[in-house]
Length: 372
Image (tube, rainbow, N blue to C red):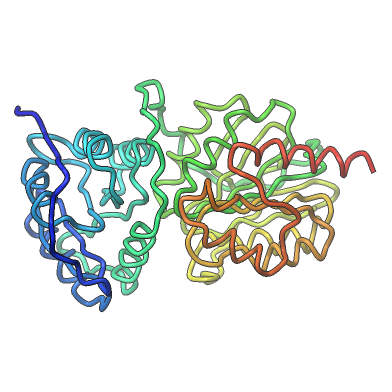
């Protein structure tokens, strides 16, 4: 296998500023055609080329200088992870991973996010009709990638790989379990997987219960929770209906279901719902935050992190009105400053802090409330 040399292209030409130039990299011609057809329907996106493998992609990048790349995980000659690693070292640029919704696919996708990919979408299944909003979903992620603040990639370690948990089953409310008296409620989207990892890794074992909504499709949230559980001192799991919210535990909203919280006979519990999407998302940050405002008030601390759009802003405003202390990630450390900015502009936030300080600020807010 030859050395992959990705150089900067010298060009005197100017790109059409009104359109985002996209290069599609996938070893399947059918997938390349499907993605090209989907993106051609977007007025602000132009597919400038396609590539079947890493070496062809290298040449296309030099010739076409795209704004965003969509990258398949599994490819011949050089897999998507190796190519992404070399690309982010030689010519950092926005990459959206196209991932299969399988155990292997989700595991590799999270490694890709660690290596610097901005976001991912699930691969369309050949022979099956794609969901009506699939094109809009890909287009939104490409737009977000174009405006993303690229992060220094974190080198993935082999020990990050963990096994999947057993299938989830619903169960009745466990009575008599002492739950956390207060919680930290977290919402994030684009760039959030790495932000949440940094937020949780240093959490002490006796921290308050943490509930988290990260915009993510089904089949990926279990793996996300398991990867975090293997890295953190606290226990991290995908939330189940009627989970008691315990100290030293974090609960990730499952893809396709809203997560909300409620007090039931003195216990703090996770609840799941299949109500319609809110702000086009399920799980929705607003859905979680609104339940915190309604049932917890000052017993909740709200944290809103990097992400595109406005999900979480209205719910955070309600939380503040109910007595919660709210913290937003600052612009300098956000991959996309959309969600924190919306909350700040609504005056829903008590303080703004860089990612590296969010954990410290949230714990301090909990301690302050306990001292009252």
